Amino acid sequence: MKKSLMLIITILNVSLFGFSELKIGVINGEEIILKTKKGKLIKERLDQLRDSKREKIDAMQNEIKKLQKALTSPALNSETQRKKNRELEDKKTNYDRFLQDAQNEFQQQSRKEMVTLYKEIMPLIHQIGKSKGFTLILDLTNAGIAYFDETIDITKEVIIAVDVKFPGK
Image (cartoon, rainbow, N blue to C red; front, side):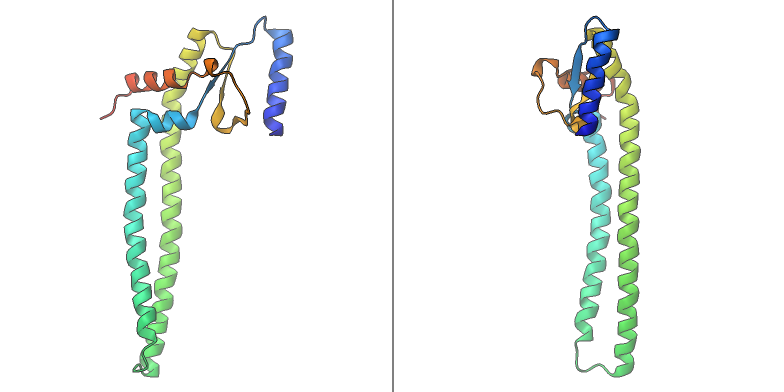
């Protein structure tokens, strides 16, 4: 919140001394991602990755549960019980590693996709901003803005421009 307030104060100070008119626009980056064809394709790819990892995680959890249940059998001799305990610990270790690796892979893929999308969208935002005479365009997703006049929101225009430039496949 302090950063947003400082940014706004700085902008207002600069506008008083450097610009004759300050024209601010806003976009909702999250909405652009969720509503553009390109953003929907990215979300679909990330969902597929997450779902494939979820299937493996579920299978590993089921194996662990079966082994835990087998260990409660009174018919096991001490040697078999020791082996099954060792097997259970190995499966838990493999599960923890896989879970961490899956989370890391998903985060890296998500970052990679968002960086690529950002690089493709930014020139369009700059073009729209320039054509509309904006001095500044803020992203509402992380700006901490409590109020804005909806007439300065160019999110829909950006979504249309992105879909025209990058039609879905």
